[in-house]
Image 1 (cartoon, rainbow, N blue to C red):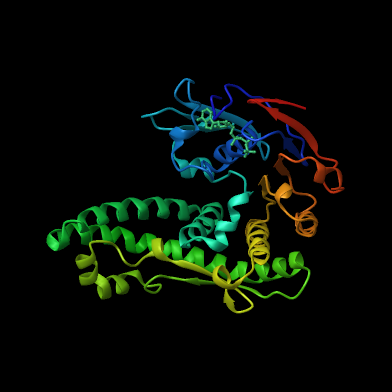
Image 2 (image 1 turned 180 degrees about the horizontal axis):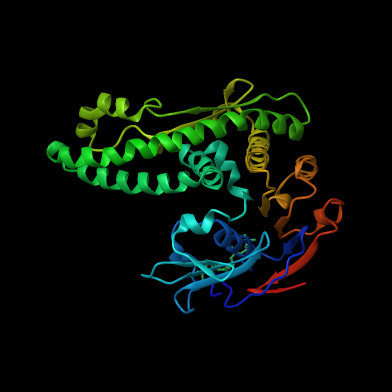
Length: 347
Ligand SMILES: Nc1ncnc2c1ncn2[C@@H]1O[C@H](COP(=O)(O)OP(=O)(O)OP(=O)(O)O)[C@@H](O)[C@H]1O
């Protein structure tokens, strides 16, 4: 193991899921994070694998578990290729490992950023979904990021490196086309689902809208031609999926600027609930819900609405520091409970 604060950990979680209780900084989020890393090779908290390795541990970490009936295992060591295996058989590439990985939805307290913060958090939201439904999405995203980084470095030198910049653009353009096709499809599917969930959680008519906006237009090649000289002057990339937006509105007005805090919280929940619904509709598979410290922070009406909106048959991993609300939650009383304390867990 050696993951975050856990030197070792073994857990058997029943099919319905579990609730992890404990004070702050005991390891609850880390348990959910380990699931996310094992299943999707992705941490919602950190883009650097190094931060996941336990400080004072062996330097790397390993996670193994049975998910969707298959034994999966990853082993991360600094300066080495990550090793992945499924059912004891090594999978050389990340894509190969993920192709039969299960689906996840992560809900956390910072989901409010989806509504309030800049476009980056909404792009991450789409990326997390896209990577789960389209095999070429993750590959294109990785390719796009690498080429964009290289292009931006060259742009720092002004227009002297035109030819090399063009060779990176030849990588960026097809990768952008994949990302945008999937993002646009997902956004369209999400629109109705988000509107329905918003109405349901708010308990009244509140019209939530989402609209995907490709920066510079869907045709990246054309957009690049139009901004080329400007990019050389400003020495940075101005168009492409890294600047796309998922615009959120409530009753026709931009949600970040006009919606109340309560409405924004509802919209953040609606976005995540809709994410689960769209993943299910796209794949026919029920995602596992990783719900980190959300319930305890909600007012009673939103908490009840969220509980009702979660699919009864889905597996849910829920963390909380407060126990009081749990006693009044009939939907969750049947879930197994684990107490987390100082990197140890007991049932
Ligand atoms: N790489 C690491 N190595 C060792 N300990 C770590 C590492 N990363 C984080 N920690 C520590 O692990 C502990 C558990 O963190 P975690 O976020 O899982 O707690 P939590 O129970 O979810 O807390 P909260 O309720 O405040 O969200 C914290 O004390 C944190 O500082």
